[in-house]
Image 1 (tube, rainbow, N blue to C red):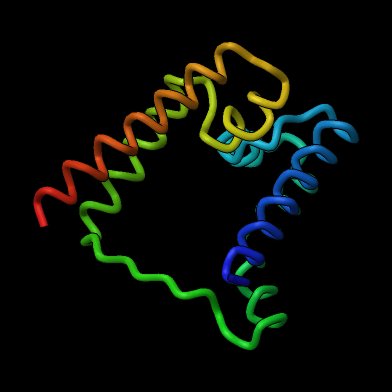
Image 2 (cartoon, rainbow, N blue to C red; image 1 turned 60 degrees about the vertical axis):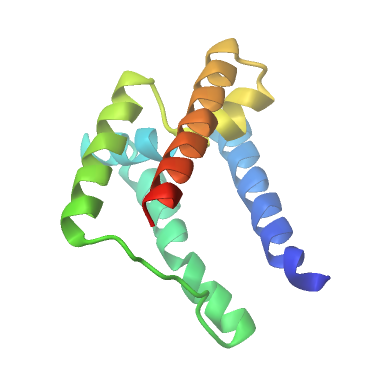
Length: 135
């Protein structure tokens, strides 16, 4: 019964941080945009702090709970590299990533973000179904 609390708290923190980034800096909390601006040398402090917060998240979780969240990576390194490249290409083609479109784009009632999020979800369902059929 209590197993949903960490996910609920995490979602609320993501929403809060995305809202604060938009209100304070006028920026969308899309990870691809944040990393892209960091690599371009734009707003280094802000973008590095946001990225550091993402990387420190599991360690803060461990400090609060006494253990790291369980993670199981079953794909091989070549599959992960190809997947990462495809995600990078997709974020450029889609003018953003799942976090930018799905969190703030939908909150702003962006039609483009609604279409992008529907495509993300439909693609995820198809891939999960196909991959499940192969196992």
